[in-house]
Image (cartoon, rainbow, N blue to C red; front, side, top):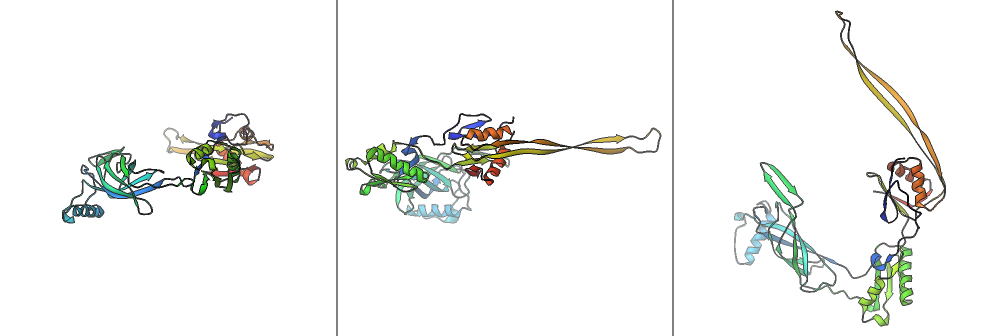
Length: 370
């Protein structure tokens, strides 16, 4: 029996191995793991800056934006210089990006990513000059400055080079200081909203029921992706404790029956709620084998004949007996895998069989090929 690769419930990866029959329900988890409080979010920051102090690995004279930036910076310090005489090989123009976590306060430190914009070979060992970081609304929320470190290297000799990772992208740990706080008014209006990571009618109803069973009739599923919760009067001055209590409530999320298949690797992942109707599966194959050999015919001694080369071919046709099995209506994922194993199906055969079963309406699940 050929081995198949099938990942079952909870992402377990199996190779021709059976597990006990699994329940169609999902595992119990916390509300915290499947949702978040609306309004509690991070913000992306971005800025344009210069990295100086590079050992000849900066931008070339062709990077006009770098030359213009250096000229403008020096002019701000009262130094006038011609752009034609500037050689910025120790300077690189970079874009600086960072993520501002929710509830960050003035003075907090952020890690920033420094990425070359021009033709610099590396930003390793450079120093990022003071760079304002702006959000999408144009306001400055942090300022970055500091040493840049990369995890890669590059060497070159005689026209040959070696590069590992990306030396044109670096990190400045704690390189930015938060200058402005993004105020998140938690519980404004006496209500919070839980946003589900995956919108689902059943899951939203279960979340609302779990909250109501603990705190009374205060939660309502507004739509498949949001549950509105009224803050009880006893928690109006301690919203954080109220949210923490909600996040710790157990919930059993519901999932759509799905089968995910990877044709390249032959991996098949099935959820435990996949069900099939009664159907018959037949698998067989036709094998054609063609062999050839070369024969050399030598003439008799002292004759006027010539040596001849002959190619002989032989065809052999064999048909593998078709294997049939009747698959009864079942909700057990083991019955599906066991039946396909019984017909000697390979992983790619199973993918074709599942597609045929879906086309016949015998399998009640969404098929996804990656």
